[in-house]
Length: 255
Image 1 (tube, rainbow, N blue to C red):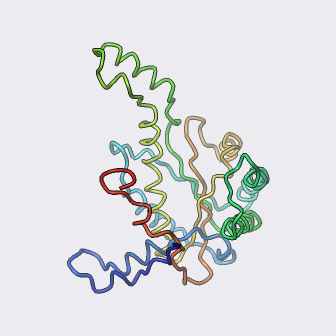
Image 2 (cartoon, one colour):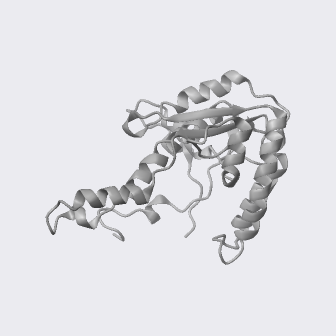
Image 3 (cartoon, rainbow, N blue to C red):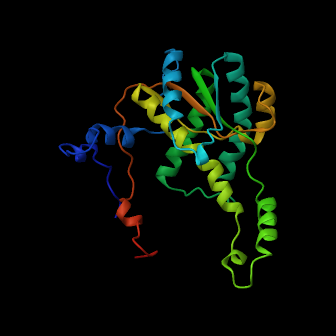
């Protein structure tokens, strides 16, 4: 069974919480990846971007590191160059995603998504604002972490659970889990101000070249890129998703 779109009015009339549930749910369920409906001709005021970023940095971050950095790009020549770099990656991604090495399913929805992503490549140089979220430092070296853990567990007695685990995957989860909540908060804050955005990672194969273009130190990790603009209309709807209860287990997998 294919689930219908979530009804944001379902929370209407619910009392006792600190927020208006219907309006909160509407924001959460209608903040979409906007590509085709970006207004390329309407300037985006700087103060709106700054407000949205102030909200974004309220997101949770592991150990309160707050090691995010945000690079806002508005210069036409720089946006043009980044767009050219992204086009190189997009050409490979587009072709590879439909081959045996890719994971794209040949469905109507998959084709629409590809067409939407292709449309973004065409308009990207004209998007008023680009925001590049970054993290200080480089992603954890999983092999080095696991080697250090191996030395630690060597002193543990046989049968200790420490001999059966690795720490590398946990550190990776912490690293990226400390920036993506802030990115999503940023997108929600932009949406509440009439602005649309989407996440693209197409420039990351050329991270070094983009870093040189923008003066980003080599020790800083670029996470993704968000094109930002006012939206053409605000009537976004919840997406069609399988009901969560069809993909949710309680207490045990499969239960």
